[in-house]
Image (tube, rainbow, N blue to C red; front, side, top):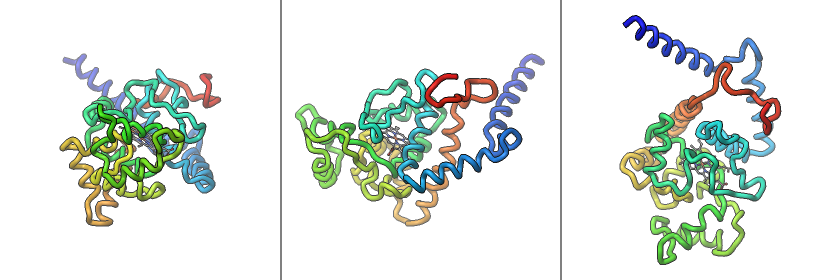
Length: 261
Ligand code: HEM
């Protein structure tokens, strides 16, 4: 019995120490202005190129899901180097072809629930994808060679005009058709209306639990629901950021980002 208590106490202390290493101000003694430096550096780059917001957000998501079996810098950065890959090194990373069941499973494997899934995928309110990622939905979805029937008809025409059958696969496509640069709730309205760009985004409407969350954020009472997405997104990001974080002497802080020390 005493042994059991010791184990419980040790687990509790381990949990505490991980928690205390994941707090704001953790570096206040070793690097006094660490957070301020990161913030002002990101701010200054953002001012020069606001599209880094989407890139950083996506990178952060991949870092949280990919384990050490694949270096995080290998995340496909299609827009910048013109190469896009659907394959991912880690099978635990969600794919745009995933059914809602597969997405739910991959998130729940990381301790994230259905609400977290929908909230976090709401990040697709900014940024873009590319014709080659979505073209199969436009021309080659069904056995008879038709488009994905869940795409809204007028949106389908727009997407087909933007991404012709044999056109340039690296052409960018906004993930949120209405407001690619605004962090707002129109992404959820798009999913509700059949205007989701990625198949995985549109599938969030297939399942009762995820549809409920989409509806909640797509709600028509302006402001109130927008505010709610804002707040819940922050909370979900903090939760996602805590997944399997290496603390203390685990792992290493690279001196050169692209190389092991
Ligand atoms: C089921 C989960 C998800 C899937 C299948 C998925 C898939 C994708 C795909 C295929 C792209 C386009 C990549 C390209 O064309 O180069 C993309 C872009 C993006 N994703 Fe996700 N994603 C998921 C969840 C998330 C989450 C949780 C976040 C952040 C919290 C996120 C943030 C982004 C952002 C910001 C972009 C735009 C990047 C840019 O413009 O540079 N995604 N995602």
